[in-house]
Image (cartoon, protein in one colour):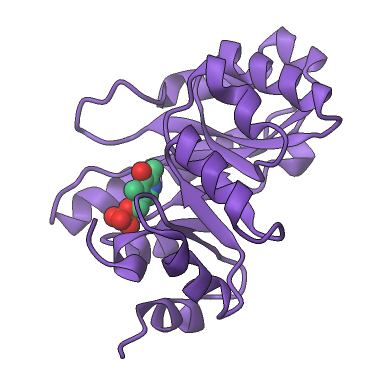
Length: 218
Ligand SMILES: *Cc1c(COP(=O)(O)O)cnc(C)c1O
């Protein structure tokens, strides 16, 4: 049997984290990868994330990578490891509130819109710096902004993908130099999926999110 997971995981530079994106895939498929020693899994829907959390081993680190509605934060706040998709201060405040209720600090990434395609989601590149400097941030003691997340345009043009990832990396470096509350913890760039993770790595990704290449087509 070909083992795409091991092919990817074994070649990965040590400083890069692989999030295995298991959305729509059954628990048995997750356990297969878990049994190879993998612990980071990503989902994009709250209900599916919660049900998988409940039925799978408790040492899995669950990543929320999809659009997150404010009214659903409470369901994942007790256990989520990293939320990749923060794009409004309203959402961040709600995550903070629910984190506090659970006596935790929840790590978050700011989702940034870098693709050419229209998308409803993600901060504009030019708004990221202002976002981390919002005065409200100082009251949000139960969340930590750990870095940025982005998705490149779905295209075969590798130069374009590369340029989009470069924009995210550049913004990351710019923000990292700024004096803001979470500066010390601002270390992560989540970019790269099945089709473009190698480009993402060459452009400075610290986290890649790979689904179909590991689990097969959805
Ligand atoms: C589905 C998804 C992925 C993984 O996509 P693949 O092409 O299957 O690797 C990565 N990131 C996000 C935000 C996703 O929704």
